[in-house]
Length: 328
Image 1 (cartoon, rainbow, N blue to C red):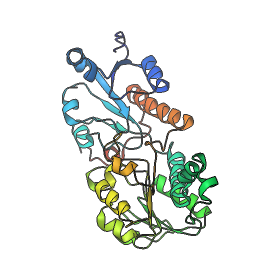
Image 2 (cartoon, rainbow, N blue to C red):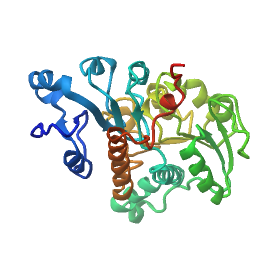
Image 3 (cartoon, helix red, strand yellow):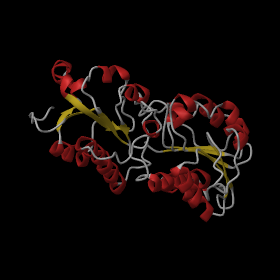
Image 4 (cartoon, rainbow, N blue to C red):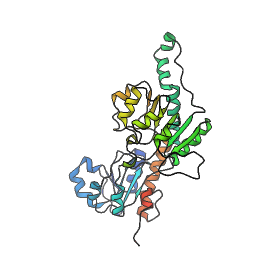
C-alpha cells in the first residue's frame, strides 16, 4: 500500500517485504510505495514516473525491465551484502548508484559458518534428536564424530567475511588456505588457483564468495570429488555457488562426509532429497538473522538513501559503482 503523497519527500519503491524496523522509519523519511509493482500494477503504472529510489533485501530482484519503468530512478539501496539479483550494469548505464550493507554482518555470518562446521562435524543436531527420541537409553551412545580443532580449512572467497571466518578458525588451531579471484599478498594464508585444487588439500571447504554468473555452480562434481570422503562442505554464500544436484549425489554416495548449508538454489524450496540426508545440517538462510545485525543493516540501507537524497556521499556503494569509469 502506498503512503499519502508528500511532495517534499522522494518517492521510494520497495521490492521486498521489509521488516517493520526498516519499513517504518523508511515511511517516516520518504513517500513509500510498498511493493506496488506486485500488488497493484495499474496503480504502479501511474506512479512509476515519480519513483526516485528502490530498496529491498539481498534476494530482491531489480532487473533492467523494472528500471526501464522508472524514468526518474536515482538510487537502489539493498539491505544485504549480496546484490546479485540487481542488474548493476543496467544501473550504471543510467548513472544510478547501487548500495548494499557490508561489514555490519561480517561477525554474524562468520559465527554461523563456524557453527555449521561444528554442527556437521560433531553431529550436534543429530545428537539432539537422538536424545529427544529416547535412543540414548535404548541404543546406547551415538557413533563417534569428527574433530574440528586442528583440521585444515579452505575458504572460497577471502573477503571481509572470509577473513572473519579465518580469525575464528585460527582460535581452533586450524590451518587455513583460500582461493578467490585474486591472491591477497597482504594475508598470511596459502593461496590456491582454483576451488578444486583447494578442496583436495582441506578437511572443511567453506564458501563465502559473491553470487552471480561468475561463480554459478563453481562447487561442482569435480570439486566435491577432490574434497573427498572425509571432507565437509559449508555454504554461507549463495545457493547458486554450489551445483545442488551434484552435491546431493555426492552426499548420497558418501563422496564427501557431510555438508552444512544456509543457502540453496531455489529458496525457500529445499529438495526433499537434501532434507532426507542424515549427513547434512540445514538452516533457513539465517546467517545474518540476529536482532542486532538486521537492525544495523536496516539503518545502513536507510542511511544510504538519506545520504543520496541529501547530496551527501554514499556510505556503502557496491564495488562496481566505485570502479565505474566516469566521463572525462
